[in-house]
Image (cartoon, rainbow, N blue to C red; front, side, top):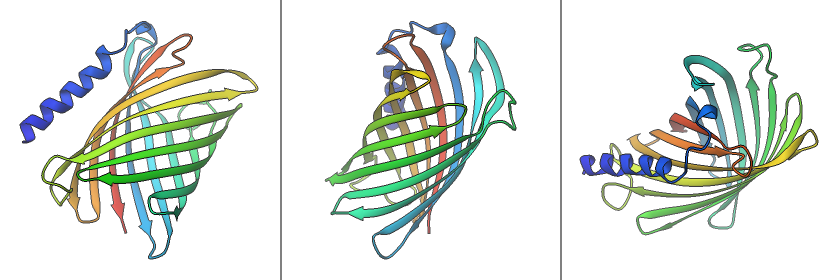
Length: 229
């Protein structure tokens, strides 16, 4: 079963690349994004999420390198609405100036509605998000993500078992000092429940940045440790 899964994962990653012509090889970039998050679920409808992560540059401007782009802290306060929905308000702060004086630190305010429902073995989720990004300029972004998650063993994810998540997200950005742009993201990740309250995920995401104009391809390799308390 594990061998079959890795074949499937490899096929999914390859499909992301061959589905889109690499028209902007010169603009291609690759990044590494590790993250640790803690989820605090209350016995009522409230829940809280705290996360710390960073972004490391692996390849940019036709050069292979390894440097830190930013360190970020994130917090979400969420409230359950209905049987499957959740409203959230988030705050994110990115430290960028400490790694490059030419960059500006960023404050991001996030409003979000997420809905997830399980159909037998498959969990289908929708996420609508509004963002305000404050740095040297202000950017407003509208985002919609669709994802599917399912276990690779049995009908549910148990301890020491793998699960797969595939997703796609569309983004529309605009601001007073920048032209509107569209972006599309495609991702696939492998997860493992390492305990009753913790899971580890390794994923890859390909982004088509501003694909209506000057397309730039970006590859993100992510690792995430999620702990529930």
